[in-house]
Length: 141
Image 1: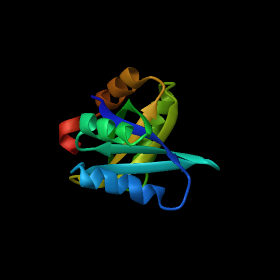
Image 2: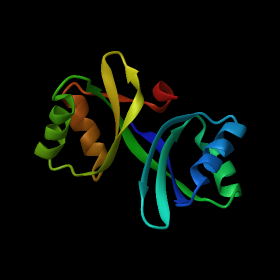
Image 3: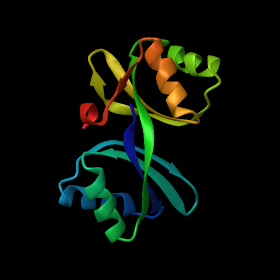
């Protein structure tokens, strides 16, 4: 039900993102999804990659602080109001969203949205129980 996301503290300076993505590319690690939230000096890069163990090893060896987080990959109907319906299910079941970001790839007619929630087990059950597809790690890699 969960997929693994790598979270990396990355210095907020010119060229640092290029260096980071080059590091992944040079090690044949596919960057599948990416989100960055920044502050003045550092950003938090959140990524879904093709090989979590290898990526963590390579990233940490280059001095980055990184860890794995479990998130939900949710197939959301790609129609007006599709996301709103999923958000309402979570709200109505008292599940808070810590953050979310969209995914470039699609599943059929659905967009993929990555969710980090405060109650992942409950969220998974609520979504599945309402016919919302949750993707597994191998389905997105």
